[in-house]
View 1 (tube, rainbow, N blue to C red):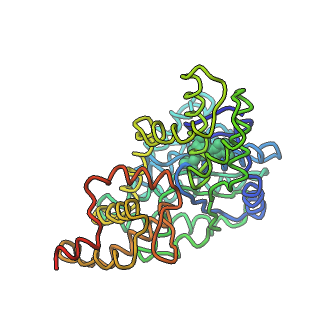
View 2 (view 1 turned 60 degrees about the vertical axis):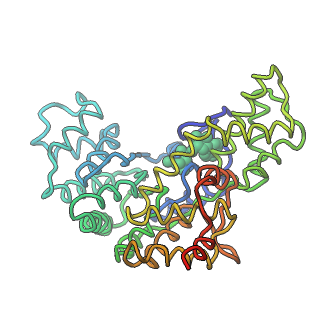
View 3 (view 1 turned 90 degrees about the vertical axis):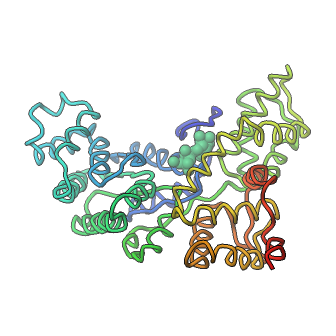
Length: 408
Ligand SMILES: Nc1ncnc2c1ncn2[C@@H]1O[C@H](COP(=O)(O)OP(=O)(O)O)[C@@H](O)[C@H]1O
Ligand SMILES: [Mg+2]
């Protein structure tokens, strides 16, 4: 198993997730479409790629596409078209439907060109028809077909931010549901996945039924044992000697077994040992590396993505509310009911429906895994995320409840 801190992993670099794979495989065999959610960096893309690899070994066709860059339905359909291109039995069938745009033989067109040509043939009036045909051609295969559409919520957010956004989101999701229903129980199974909340989004738009044909499955963190075993396996592979309690200290320091954080911690500890000319790491190194590398400048760029994603996840007007909540939970350990009342009072003079916006922001923060609900309020389950946000806000966040006394 190689250390990886970048893109998704599969095959020899993929660790564990056996139970999750078993559940996903069962759903796929039963022809249930799945909505796979989970905090970013939890390993969603890796788990679906690994599932695809394993199903391919069992005779399935595996297709996957990432629609993060799509800004309209036509783009999303063209992305799916690019994914099906290598499977000639599907792409040549589909090319016949769109023959007006294909003068050459399908073998002579690259996947990227195929996408461009399909995209050129789609417009606001035709994407539904061709999109459905594309799914229909997948479903008409003798072999079962798994199609993964990754980062679907980000694409929907792009739609939402455009003109008449809510209507376009509704149109796309209604189309997808209608198309899958009309195709019926063919060979096609769909997994849509993404980290930012699709459920809070459709709930907010008042259209929760548009995604109820998906079986929701949430990918959680690794438990302590799994994180420890993964760490030790990495150490063994790189011949890095780790003091007995190092792997457990890594987990306890992180507070939550987000696979990417376990991997990053390993990579930083290994670098640390190399820089010191050692092939051994100790428990003392864990704390040192946590403070200086994971929380320090090298880790910041990675964690910055969380802020970007959050901005995409909530409505523009709710973003500053979400940041206030995170700042409070990070610097005060918990966002209490009292703090929530203060926040509502502070914002009621600035935005309309402050209470509703706070509820929306909390919905997204919980759904996307930043915070979890406890007896006394909302807390960060991940110590790394908490410490990072605390470092970001420490110097300028005034605790909400003290602001109340100042205002009164
Ligand atoms: N099963 C796994 N085994 C080993 N590393 C993993 C696994 N899942 C995730 N990771 C680590 O997390 C990183 C992000 O994984 P990815 O699948 O891209 O997450 P997501 O799609 O949820 O954002 C990977 O680069 C890898 O370092
Ligand atoms: Mg991903």
